[in-house]
Image (cartoon, rainbow, N blue to C red; front, side, top):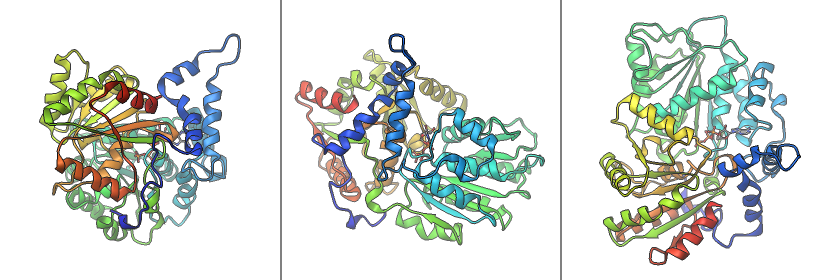
Length: 461
Ligand SMILES: Nc1ncnc2c1ncn2[C@@H]1O[C@H](COP(=O)(O)OP(=O)(O)OP(=O)(O)O)[C@@H](O)[C@H]1O
């Protein structure tokens, strides 16, 4: 964790009686939620579509110097190729966010320099590194020149989608290096490769993926990819196979102290964009907790919340895969339509579930930490921590907490998170996270549903 002791509590959280400033921003962005967006696509009687009003509101937020979405410059001033600008504008990116404005000129400068970039969840880090990949590769060479690693299949697929959209007006080729995505024996010739560490190492060993022409090595969710308890071994092995002069780019919303030294050694001489410990939380995400009496009571509370979970879309995080399956089964048999996703499901099933959820065909997804990071679905307005996030050593895990709740409140939108506690231990764990992040997590009653619904409905408006 970053220097948690120095974080003043209450500073960046939102309480029910927040200041006018926060309410102001909140009301400016609230129409960006799905329902409002759909409404925004319709027309006022005889008038022009009101979608532009949504964009105007986002523009207001992006004009607030205190917002991580703020920028002074336009995309045109960031040295991007006109074909990339065309792709960006088609995606309705009108103005860069702070991380995009700051990182892109450093990433694109020559000679290439390594980068460690940190910015809050949902503030547009993907575009920063995708635009770098699309700018750095030589489209006349049919060999891999940029490799991006992500910790999950789901995130790799999402990044590929962004590459395809932003690179739509370029002749680039991009390919997956994730399980079951390549035809056996086919050598990778695409300039851009997006993969997960296990499959990438495999393909390199089999010489299906060659690295001689690599110019750029990107780690999304870099602290996770370099965490000794996680993917560090595989990531390091891949790095050691890379040409020495390859530009190394690390992005994440969190860089806890335990990986900080390692990141610097991994990407020596980096330009660094860091957040202060007080800047980690996203203002648009209102944080709540519900005090349950027991484990079975947690399920009853969850079931009671179903109507709220389907106002937009919701993700429920649990610790164990069998819990995900079990509570999905129970909710379904209670007549609530939910699905589950975890890392031991087969790849086709994972893709199918994720695609359905992304399209909004399913409103509630129960999952493990497998999609705690990076997943960007703007309609998700509620995250439930059914189990408080813990590290592998079973200590409270503020980073995972931040990433989990960051699945909502994307790019200025509002959202809510609810933590379930059910005994002294889980209460203490939540409190430890609250203290580490200096945020306020507000109690919602479990014995007065009228009040509970009122509070939560207000937050999800
Ligand atoms: N300049 C922009 N203008 C409008 N929308 C943007 C802009 N940049 C990014 N977005 C949108 O904001 C959302 C969040 O972006 P992204 O997924 O890159 O966030 P992130 O910083 O990588 O978050 P996380 O830390 O959770 O991975 C996406 O839907 C993306 O399309």
